[in-house]
Length: 145
Image 1: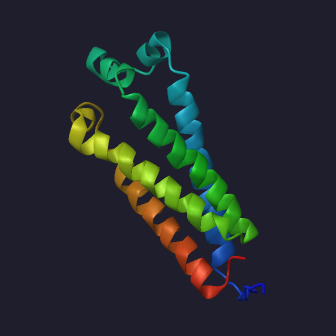
Image 2 (image 1 turned 180 degrees about the vertical axis):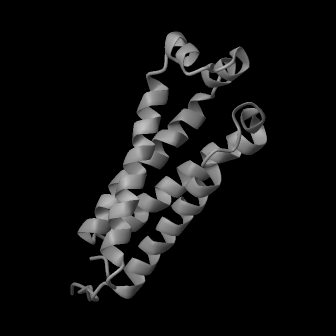
């Protein structure tokens, strides 16, 4: 016997929010790619101090992996929201876990905040949690199939 999933009508705000989420996550992916491509010359050109460059160069691989999971799963999860796919919730959950792992290092295990400042970190954390909640609610309400 197969279970049928009832797909509910989405609120008017849903699709614009999903599109903004995709744009936001694409910007995060662009930042990730730029950071991965940074060279000594590009860090100098960006005005990073020697301490900041040392921090960038000594970022642990697990933090880089968490960043990659956060942005890649965020992009895919946002596409899933637009397409109203249930997998969006799982992808956005992985994204949130990546974001939280990355920011654990940023805030508690490194001098990142001291050397680089806070930047958009609080917005990234809150946004990833909010999108995960949206994915969860979407599965509960039948917006995602």
